[in-house]
Image (tube, rainbow, N blue to C red; front, side, top):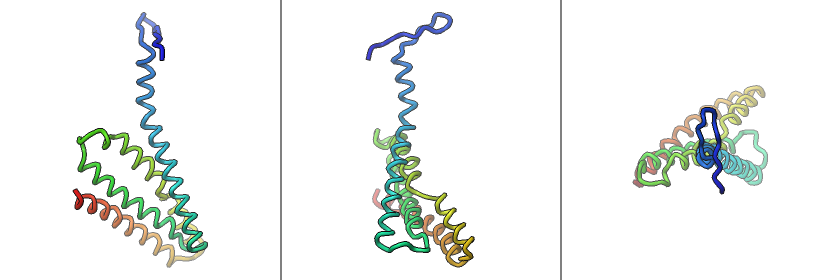
Length: 156
């Protein structure tokens, strides 16, 4: 790439490659989140399709509950792994955290879908399943986070 200068008011000249490098550095985190979210969304879709193929259409949203519990477990495991390896090399950088947590797990977990499915159960008058879904999701997701944290800490 050829270097070109940009003349700014006051006679200051900046190399365009410095500007491009700065823009690239700011775009990398956004691209990593984008890619991670796409992969996480694809994985969520695969779990949904697999659940329907294995169990048929269910009135209880097991797939979403499973996705959220698994996502919370993975979040706990990754958080522990990142904390234990902080400063140990470039792999555990902010970029990897953005890719895996904000991106992949943000695309994989489905709190908005959970909320909608809870509302649908309530609107159908299915208060027992709605309560079981809300409480079960909350408890199991919290257990998932602690299990992930504990597993990685025990391994380290």
